[in-house]
Length: 421
Image (cartoon, rainbow, N blue to C red; front, side, top):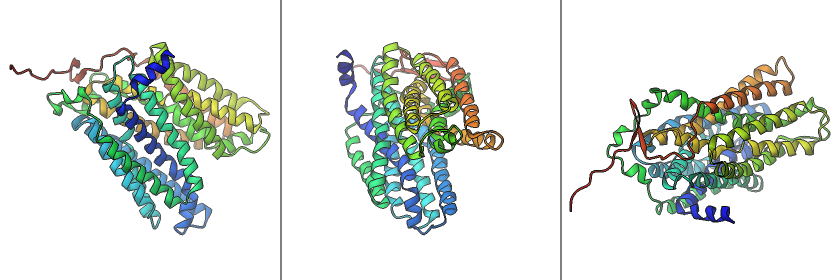
């Protein structure tokens, strides 16, 4: 009952709108994967090899857009405010979503997905930063957990909509949802910690490169790498991984992703709750990483599994890597107000980009080793680096976020001048 009362106490308009924004964000990210084949066939592709190659091109265009957008929106979040980024990003990816419904060839499709990726890159970081700066330090973990949990439901919605509606209608649905959300955001206020800054020009992303901050920034990214290793390899390549493990029954990537995504949604909620209960972000993430690593070993080393057991393991592994909200919150808390938006926006996008490195390592190793062995080696590296990086980060659960970064180190935020009356 106490937990439910605390949950209700943080469920304000800012948290709800931020969560719905992330819902639309993940809806759009997931939708292309669901409608990829149908949409490419509809614009004229028939050869499966061409569909695969063009799908990879379009997917990569979106990921490049997210990398570019992460830097763009991150700097703008610290220069112009968190709320302006939430408006701008959702406006861009909503119209890009609508444009996807009218793609006429692979090139136009890739361009629209690139623009969508640029827009999508700003949503989560700005939302988490705004929520974290708007709530008391004892409750901000719960607020960001609600945001991430609502967002993860967007994956489930995309899987449902993409399979039951025509691909054009699915894209139009995502675009109109984003535009509708814009109107709700007119009632959300900017972060007080940002508005009281007297000199916005102090928002200098180059501060990340000095004073030991760059190592801390890289560690924030490394802590999140197992999340996208799991979704990008263990779930996506589940049929290939289980082919040599004498699994009884047929394992499909679609079902592995479905059950894994449900686990991720539940995991985001549980990780946030555990961090509140333990009063520690680091310990909550460490527990998740250790459990995830052990379950990965069970997945890859246990012969004679059934397809049902594989889906069950996908669900459980999804829970263990469902610490996305805690990760982004922890990253935001590591840095001062004047570069917090840059960090919170770029870290999740570089974590997403790490999937390319994990997939490349997996592709290289599986040429000489079995598919399952290659996945276990890459996974062990990802989980090992994440745990090592976690030890280099500071505990931030009780940290007051009212400070800024300078060339000489963190300093209390400048207070606005007081005029006499």
